[in-house]
Length: 53
View 1 (cartoon, rainbow, N blue to C red):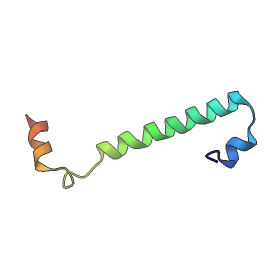
View 2 (cartoon, rainbow, N blue to C red):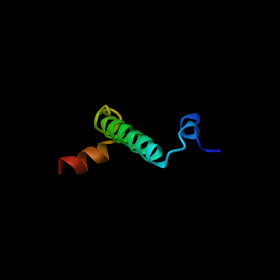
View 3 (cartoon, rainbow, N blue to C red):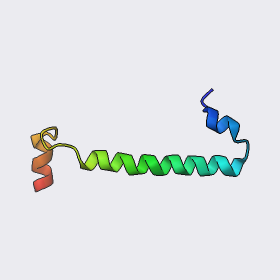
View 4 (spheres, rainbow, N blue to C red):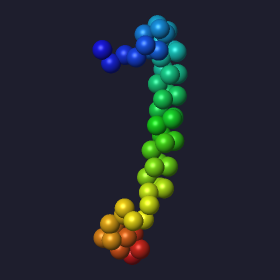
């Protein structure tokens, strides 16, 4: 089953939606930061050229 123990312990649909929205908010906050704070050494030269132009 893909349900976690937290989801199983909360039968209310409204509580499930709030949990999902909270998880999405955390993911949305974490992913963009990782993409932006990548070290320049990892970025290929080709991508730099395209970005500079």
